[in-house]
Length: 124
Image (cartoon, rainbow, N blue to C red; front, side, top):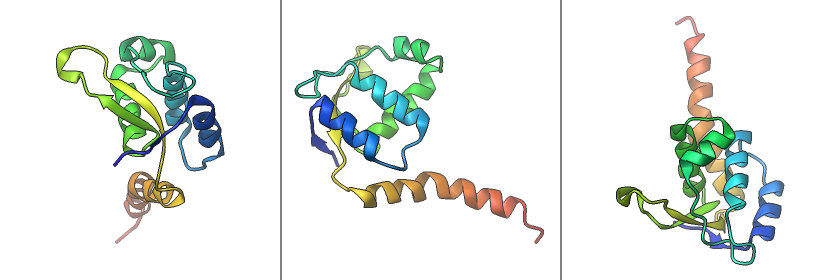
C-alpha cells in the first residue's frame, strides 16, 4: 500500500486541499517536505532527533506522526534503516484512496475516542 509519487509543489497543494488531517500531523508532514527534492519529492532523510527538537516534541511523538503519514500514504518509506542506526529514507506521495482513505482514517483514529467518551459518561 503506497501512494503515487509526486513533486513537492503538487504534494503541498494536495495536502492544503485535503480535509481531515490533524494539525500536528500536517505540521510534521510539512516539515518532512522541506527535506525533499523539489522536483521529485524523493530523498527525505531527516534526523528525527533534530526535527523533534525543532518542533519541541518528543522523538517518540514525531516517530508516531511519521508512521501515521506513511500509513495514510502521504509519505512513502523507500529505505527502512531503523536497524542500522541511520535515518530511513522517505518520499512524498499522494494517497491513492482519495476521500475514502480520509473517511477510513476518521473512523480508525477518531471514532474509538468518541465512543469511549460517550460510553464513559453513560449511567448503565
